[in-house]
Length: 208
Length: 405
Image 1 (cartoon, rainbow over the protein chains, first blue to last red):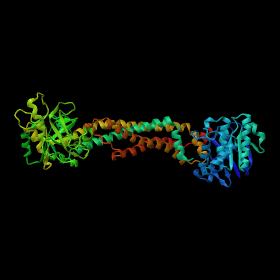
Image 2 (cartoon, rainbow over the protein chains, first blue to last red):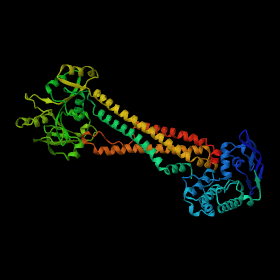
Image 3 (cartoon, chains in turn cyan, red):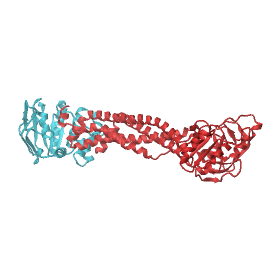
Image 4 (cartoon, chains in turn cyan, red):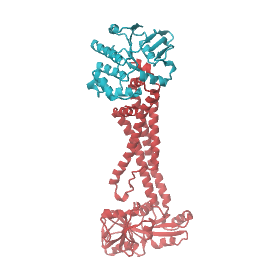
């Protein structure tokens, strides 16, 4: 279960972001829509524990982020939250497969090579296992980035504008992939975007 | 996959930057290590030949030349001296023992030295074969000569005039090898020893030959009184150092030189050059540190998002610090070992091209104790170079880095 209450944040005193409360059960999806400048990225960073809110709290599976030390929060995030960004980023000196293994290593999980290969096959990157990230097309990169987030079977998948730089065809593929994988592992999925194409694809959505 | 492996991959995936830092470090370390090795081997060689020689007496001239010619056999002698004149000093109560040396002839570039049995004993050297000479024209040869001249027990040869190859051959008197010495890593390895009378005998044919004997010994003087080239002196007590050399220099036609003093003067002269090259080498090491810093700093700038991503994946701050630190340290440690390897390789190559007469270079592949200083220096340079990138990695602002796409 993911629960937030009374979250606010401000970068300066003149403008304060106030976010609606969220309650999400295991296996549920949530779409958060909003235009530029309404604090979408800020919210996703608060939800992942990268930023601390000025007031309110985030609670996940009974753990409040503010109760954790910075180190245990890093580890909590590493093993429970998978993040996908608008621009896909990798450790550029490692192959796609090694990027997946590094993600497992950093979240203290078993580096199961077979499972990593299987996941890459599932998302259509079977022939790119040993390619360097730079050698992939943008759509492929985004799929590979999702794989690095999913490989550690997180409880919560946080996607920040995962489709904004993709064409319709790739956009549809990515959303289907995210929903499929989330339901496969019974994970909660939150997508924050200004991409109106996604509006009809989710039952629950919030406007910021 | 782990942090150690990632550090390593980051280094080899960045070959040009890595090579530059690595080579600079290796050059700096290599030059210093080479100088330390050469310095040590020259000093050892110089000091090793000094045992039991407190003073050298020879003809007037440069004291350093006298020492170099009569102890190290690497310069021309200053001239000849009358044996009877030197014998006066021999009777001085402060003198414990003396060894006469006569030289001026050579065989295939190796010097033939006329002396007494006391001279080889000075080097505490054992025999490979045979024994000391017991009559004229018998020689004992140093171990290096056996191979270089293809001589063995019982071989005979003619000496040639002068100290370098190509002099006139004294073909009336043949020397015969009666003893071969063990290797001692001193100058005696490269000498042919015989008694003083043999040297005189070879040169006594001068009456019926018309070549001149300038600078060369034997009983060449017209009055037939015996001459030698130099005399090695050992004192009874250190008091001898104070009065005897001055006494000889002021009251006789002879020159007295104290090898310990002349050699420390020579070493300090050499040391000046060694020190300035050392400074340059240290400077190269510092530049290599700068290069490691710049390459880490630049790659980190490009990899800011990468580090933030690793934090999102669950990496702790310390893991990032370890990653950056290892990259800096790996390069400096690799550079260090490469440098030490370089110096050995260069020394090995140099020893091939050096004339055997001047072979001060016995190759030492093991580390010498002065070189252990290079370890903390290289590690320190690597540490300092990684420090700023480490601090950057530690304090990386994840939200800000992630938002600045």
